[in-house]
Image 1 (cartoon, rainbow, N blue to C red):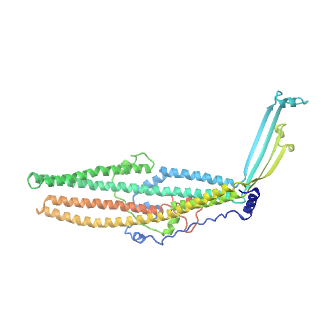
Image 2: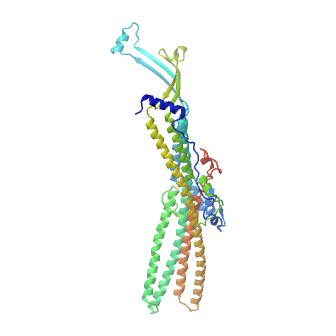
Image 3: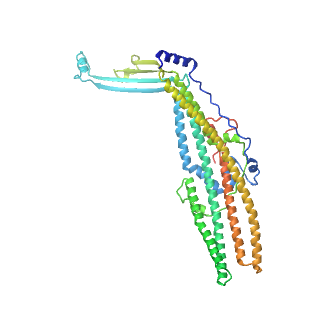
Length: 496
């Protein structure tokens, strides 16, 4: 156990040399490739429209989609929650800034008293000649106190609060990007389900025509009962798929209402009119993986949280050292009358120098520093993991986008071939070479291929949305190499 002399020696050594070295914060470096794996293929996309990352949804050239995203950014409740959280951290920053400044207060009081002569004090005072039991007191004082931040504890606390505020600002923008992407994704899903429903209903009609033809042939003994039952089963399967598609469509429409901050069913009438699936545009400027770290707000959140944890180490280390404060007050006090408060005889003043030092609490301070360092290590790992996952999201979105486009292109070729086959089959039917069954079966094959292509188009457009979101599209990032400041996030994001 340390003696008082040893503790004093340790304290003096801390003052002279410092018990710990507070590391200067340096933004961590991450090892990333120069280009994304599928970047070249995405850049060579045959899409005729190019979309700017700051307002990528306009590249889909769908006015209703643009309108819904604009409304969502104004009305979505997730945005309201994020803004409220940002205001809370702004208040924390204001408190940390105020801690660096002197605290000034003014107090004034007036009192009227009547002394009892039955108390011990009253009996003593009443024994004096001319004692007046009634009295007045008036006092006005202006006081101030200021903690001198010699060892940077308050400054580091302010730096941590600033980094927390910057993280909350970036978090608000991350919520904005999520809202735009989710709104676009839901809208594409709605249009895709409507297209699939159209195909499914046409398939049902084709299967019904096929079943009618087979039943007619069966009644004349020209078709086996097996063929009838097979056609009935195929028709039932198609009919059963329609309610599921309709349920999915209603669910998506309800989700759109929630994104827009409105009750379910608000936009049902507007969305009920079917429209084409929005075609994904080309990305005008993908950038490099390294630029992704400065563009994506969720990565800015992780980096700012790391900076805050580093600043808290400094605040914890500052607890080793004494804290000095100076203060004083000036004022006036009198018991005569209010008119005499500001007379020269009523003036009063005081000044003081304060000292607070956790001299016998170094063990607890050591634990607090160790905890702060552990939090910094956690935030560093979180930042590096976030960077890796960000690049993973981009790569996955690019891969899905490319493959779905390729799938849609192949299916388009197949549809062309099946369309020609259907034409040939119908021409043969008109000449009596084949029956109507062959024509209806050709129609069925064509519709199935059309449904597969529709699904590929849906997933291609959704993958494009995921790519824009993964790239951090939807706001204007800081200039290359610029350090994030308390104004960077708010000043550089693009509205709508």
